[in-house]
Image (cartoon, rainbow, N blue to C red; front, top):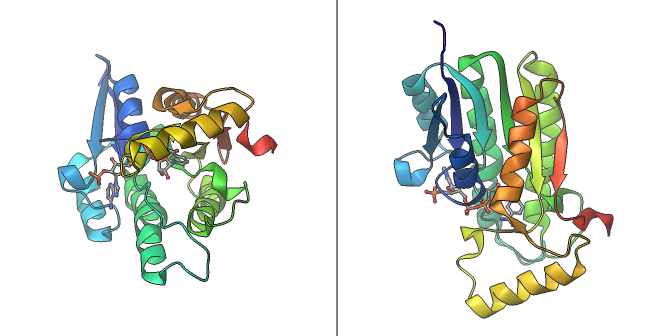
Length: 222
Ligand SMILES: NC(=O)c1ccc[n+]([C@@H]2O[C@H](COP(=O)([O-])OP(=O)(O)OC[C@H]3O[C@@H](n4cnc5c(N)ncnc54)[C@H](OP(=O)(O)O)[C@@H]3O)[C@@H](O)[C@H]2O)c1
């Protein structure tokens, strides 16, 4: 069929970075599906993810931004059940999505996952995020080989102003943003729009696969 629209699926696209990306992708030549628990999809539930893709059919690009929650704290303090819950959502959710979404991806398509700077910036009390993001980055590269010619990349955001921090009280949140703003080489904390542009880059650039793109204001420079 000529003039076929490009189909995107953004899992986690109802909030924050995913919602901003979905909005940036939206135009008269695209169909953008977003899903999360709000729309009835729990990405940690493999059967639900399987049926979700079955209901959508052929797609061009799959993006996963779901699951910003992970418990903070030292290894000796964090409840293992809470750590596993975070893994079930962000890591196993991404695997569920790639596993069951891949077969629907059309020629020239891609998968883009989301890690985070804590994969490679060593910060005490963040081991759950560090471990999840590292696992996502490693699996991204393995899948880039296994699923070729589907391209598989990951975006690694630094601190970004989104609803992920809506549970903090306002004063603490603003203090966190200000602290980071003054220490980052960019002199600003990321906006969802800054991060969304990186997903568009790896989706559009047909020479990029197995790549982790850092969009962190220079946080990893130390
Ligand atoms: N913001 C940052 O500073 C930052 C930094 C580094 C990395 N990241 C990463 O960037 C990604 C997006 O974060 P964000 O800041 O945009 O977070 P956000 O605003 O909290 O959005 C997270 C999205 O995930 C969905 N979600 C959560 N649990 C889910 C589940 N079980 N099944 C399906 N969807 C689920 C949420 O919708 P429902 O509640 O409706 O399910 C929501 O749409 C995450 O992977 C996060 O770890 C963010």
